[in-house]
Amino acid sequence: MASVTSLTSAVHQRLANALTAALPERADADPLLRRSDRADFQANGILALAKKAKANPRELAAQVVERVVTGDVIQDIEVSGPGFLNITVTDRAIVENLAARAEDPAGRLGVPHAEHPGTTVIDYAQPNVAKEMHVGHLRSAVIGDAVVQLLEFTGENVIRRHHIGDWGTQFGMLIQYLDEHPHELDHKAGEVSGEEAMSNLDRLYKAARKLFDSDEEFKTRARRRVVDLQAGDPHTLAMWQKFVDESKIYFFSVFEKLDMEIRDPDIVGESGYNDMLAETCRLLEESGVAVRSEGALCVFFDDVKGPDGKPVPLIVQKSDGGYGYAATDLSAIRDRVFNLKADSLLYVVDARQSLHFKMVFETARRAGWLGDDVKAHQLAFGTVLGKDGKPFKTREGETVKLEDLLDEAVERATAVVREKAEKVGLSEEEIVENGRYVGIGAVKYADLSTSAVRDYKFDLDQMVSLNGDTSVYLQYAYARIQSILRKAGEARPVAHPELALAPAERALGLQLDRFGETVLEVAASYEPHKLAAYLYQLATLLTTFYDQCPVLKADTAEQVENRLFLVDLTARTLHQGMALLGIRTPERL
Image (cartoon, rainbow, N blue to C red; front, side, top):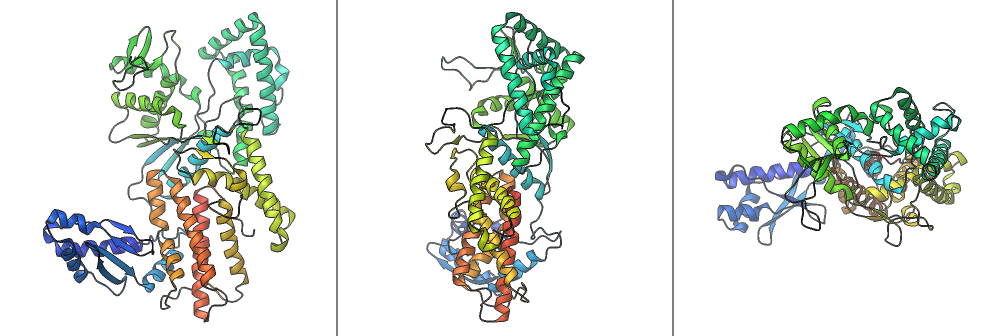
């Protein structure tokens, strides 16, 4: 793969070389760089280095200026203020760098792979068997999928895990009811739609719950069935598997609506770690990491106390011998570290579970399952709020079903697409398809453009708006470029490094050149909202470029080709960036 060094890195290296020459006793000098608002580069490392070297910062900056090689990459460099360096790169360097990105034979736009890729197990999109997915499941799925795309693009070996809720006492009730009413689920997996599958499960759950609450004899039989399930009774397990299979039909239908790939081998629920639970507890107790307290196996922490000031433990095994979530999560860590050979564990889980995972990770460290060579990180996310700033609910106060929310988003987006369809010449089939891409993209982008840890308001009117920081704005920017390229006739995108660039061309070109470093930074920090911010800024600079720099009516044929080259590379960058966020870019809108 032909990776391309960004202009930021090239300038950075020039400054480092000049500083090394100016301060030979500090050969490790590495100036900090930041970008100025005018899309050039500014170094502020001079002040810190001057202080360490007990030198005058303006004098040191002047020495650096004398030693910096200019002409090819750096056009101009000057000292300003107390010792800042204002640096302007050449137009030729911008265009040549972009040409190298465009010609990348791997189609990666010159984006390098991470220097030290490893193996990451990412735990995300965790629905529950026999329960409908609601708006609370949205963020884990959308954020997790984007992080998967980013990590895989940078060369990381990513192992996906969907830790579904497929175990627990409720299954005794459900299994017993189905055993006594076998025709409630008398079809085979794959014979019904996802909506029908969930309708069947919902109906069965309500009937089982009603009987459980009203019939003491049934309640006794259901509780006995829990014991049979935990003991591995073949018939009971077969009944349980029916619930899992039925739920998967539904899961896959929802994830298909989300335009997200969920593979069956990646679904390893709570039940997948049952055989490890007893050993996990034994290892923790024998090592002294966990101790018995009032019959339960617990792990205590000096900094975790309840309102009464008493320690709040992580309960690994209950006093009645049952296992809690902690036992399952710790067993999952053992499996992911020792069997899957992961060196990074990433959990995309609601911020309200942060204390639980803090205690689980610390327990695993004490047990020696996590350490310097294996890291665990919770990518915590906030709550989806309604327009009123409160947790998103229906008018009746119920949790919003995820399918209903997605259907409404697609409906709203389709109406927006239809408004412009006649002008663009879209067929009914294209309107429906683009409406789906725009609607689902709007939901994903609203989530991903917000820092994961923050709450955000779910406002469909804003999400499908053509104005502002929305995916629709970015999708229309991409489609607009495709329209220009179709109208270009015989003119083709060709880079012309010899041409002078207008300010709007320079700004757009410098933003395009930052794509690679942005992707690597975002993947390393698990912060897809920063990629969304980059793409929005790119689309905004493209709008300014449109207003100030005619493309097809430029003054010369060479200028037409160069501007076609700039917009073509912008389209390719938008397409790749949006794909990393799991969002489609229709060719015509």
